[in-house]
Image (cartoon, rainbow, N blue to C red; front, side):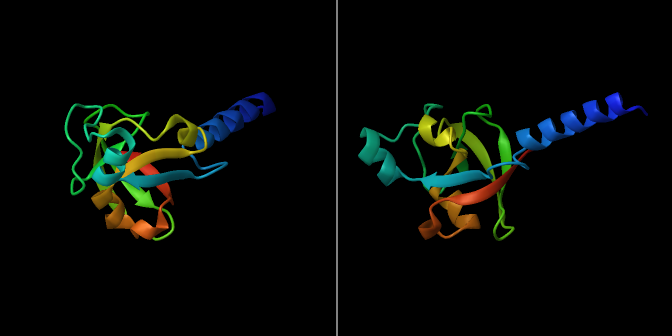
Amino acid sequence: MNWEKISIILVFLVAVLWACGALGEPLTASWYSEASCLAESGQCIMANGQPLDDSALTCASWDYRFGTSLKITNIDNGKSVIVTVTDRGPAKRLYKRGRVIDLSKQAFLNIADLKKGIINIKIEEL
Protein backbone atom coordinates (compact mmCIF):
# COMPACT_ATOMS: atom_id res chain seq x y z
CA MET A 1 0.00 0.00 0.00
CA ASN A 2 1.41 3.40 -0.89
CA TRP A 3 1.51 6.47 1.34
CA GLU A 4 -1.23 8.24 -0.60
CA LYS A 5 -3.71 5.44 0.11
CA ILE A 6 -2.66 5.31 3.77
CA SER A 7 -3.16 9.05 4.19
CA ILE A 8 -6.63 8.87 2.58
CA ILE A 9 -7.61 6.05 4.95
CA LEU A 10 -6.33 8.00 7.96
CA VAL A 11 -8.26 11.12 6.95
CA PHE A 12 -11.38 9.00 6.54
CA LEU A 13 -10.93 7.38 9.98
CA VAL A 14 -10.44 10.76 11.68
CA ALA A 15 -13.60 12.07 10.00
CA VAL A 16 -15.60 9.04 11.18
CA LEU A 17 -14.28 9.33 14.75
CA TRP A 18 -15.05 13.05 14.82
CA ALA A 19 -18.60 12.49 13.52
CA CYS A 20 -19.20 9.84 16.20
CA GLY A 21 -18.06 12.18 18.95
CA ALA A 22 -14.93 10.17 19.68
CA LEU A 23 -12.71 13.20 19.09
CA GLY A 24 -13.12 16.70 20.42
CA GLU A 25 -15.80 17.67 22.90
CA PRO A 26 -17.95 14.83 24.23
CA LEU A 27 -21.63 14.68 23.39
CA THR A 28 -23.82 15.84 26.25
CA ALA A 29 -27.40 15.37 27.34
CA SER A 30 -29.68 17.06 29.81
CA TRP A 31 -33.29 16.47 30.84
CA TYR A 32 -36.56 18.30 30.60
CA SER A 33 -39.87 17.92 32.37
CA GLU A 34 -43.52 18.92 32.25
CA ALA A 35 -42.79 21.67 34.80
CA SER A 36 -39.96 23.21 32.75
CA CYS A 37 -42.03 22.93 29.59
CA LEU A 38 -44.99 24.71 31.19
CA ALA A 39 -42.75 27.46 32.56
CA GLU A 40 -41.16 28.01 29.14
CA SER A 41 -44.14 27.90 26.80
CA GLY A 42 -47.28 27.44 28.86
CA GLN A 43 -48.02 24.09 27.23
CA CYS A 44 -46.47 20.64 27.16
CA ILE A 45 -47.04 19.43 23.62
CA MET A 46 -44.01 17.88 21.96
CA ALA A 47 -43.08 18.45 18.33
CA ASN A 48 -44.72 15.13 17.43
CA GLY A 49 -48.08 16.50 18.66
CA GLN A 50 -48.28 14.35 21.81
CA PRO A 51 -48.25 15.65 25.39
CA LEU A 52 -44.98 15.36 27.31
CA ASP A 53 -44.98 12.56 29.89
CA ASP A 54 -42.27 12.74 32.59
CA SER A 55 -42.49 8.98 33.14
CA ALA A 56 -41.97 8.01 29.49
CA LEU A 57 -38.58 6.96 28.12
CA THR A 58 -38.35 9.60 25.41
CA CYS A 59 -35.97 12.25 24.15
CA ALA A 60 -35.70 15.36 22.03
CA SER A 61 -33.21 15.37 19.16
CA TRP A 62 -32.50 17.34 15.99
CA ASP A 63 -30.50 14.48 14.46
CA TYR A 64 -32.95 11.57 14.44
CA ARG A 65 -36.45 11.02 13.06
CA PHE A 66 -39.49 10.71 15.31
CA GLY A 67 -39.92 7.12 16.44
CA THR A 68 -36.22 6.27 16.26
CA SER A 69 -34.99 4.15 19.18
CA LEU A 70 -31.68 5.22 20.70
CA LYS A 71 -29.49 3.67 23.34
CA ILE A 72 -28.07 6.48 25.47
CA THR A 73 -25.11 5.55 27.66
CA ASN A 74 -23.82 7.74 30.48
CA ILE A 75 -20.06 7.67 29.87
CA ASP A 76 -19.24 8.42 33.51
CA ASN A 77 -21.04 5.41 35.04
CA GLY A 78 -21.75 3.07 32.11
CA LYS A 79 -25.52 3.04 32.70
CA SER A 80 -27.74 2.97 29.60
CA VAL A 81 -31.36 3.65 28.72
CA ILE A 82 -33.33 3.04 25.53
CA VAL A 83 -35.43 6.02 24.48
CA THR A 84 -37.66 6.97 21.57
CA VAL A 85 -37.29 10.30 19.76
CA THR A 86 -40.57 12.19 20.23
CA ASP A 87 -39.53 15.84 20.25
CA ARG A 88 -37.08 18.35 18.80
CA GLY A 89 -34.35 19.91 20.86
CA PRO A 90 -32.22 20.89 22.71
CA ALA A 91 -32.21 24.64 22.12
CA LYS A 92 -30.12 25.46 19.03
CA ARG A 93 -27.57 27.47 21.05
CA LEU A 94 -26.98 24.47 23.33
CA TYR A 95 -26.91 22.06 20.40
CA LYS A 96 -24.08 24.06 18.82
CA ARG A 97 -22.09 23.54 22.05
CA GLY A 98 -22.48 19.76 21.96
CA ARG A 99 -25.72 19.14 23.85
CA VAL A 100 -27.31 16.76 21.37
CA ILE A 101 -30.10 15.14 23.40
CA ASP A 102 -32.67 16.26 25.94
CA LEU A 103 -33.95 13.23 27.84
CA SER A 104 -37.30 12.91 29.56
CA LYS A 105 -37.10 13.12 33.34
CA GLN A 106 -37.47 9.34 33.78
CA ALA A 107 -34.94 8.49 31.08
CA PHE A 108 -32.36 10.76 32.73
CA LEU A 109 -33.14 9.28 36.16
CA ASN A 110 -32.42 5.81 34.80
CA ILE A 111 -28.80 6.74 34.06
CA ALA A 112 -27.96 9.69 36.33
CA ASP A 113 -29.03 11.79 39.30
CA LEU A 114 -31.21 14.74 38.26
CA LYS A 115 -28.91 17.04 40.28
CA LYS A 116 -26.15 16.24 37.80
CA GLY A 117 -28.08 18.21 35.15
CA ILE A 118 -25.76 17.53 32.22
CA ILE A 119 -23.99 14.26 31.44
CA ASN A 120 -21.49 13.02 28.88
CA ILE A 121 -23.10 10.42 26.65
CA LYS A 122 -22.65 7.94 23.85
CA ILE A 123 -25.55 7.43 21.39
CA GLU A 124 -26.30 4.25 19.48
CA GLU A 125 -29.16 4.09 16.99
CA LEU A 126 -31.09 0.85 17.31
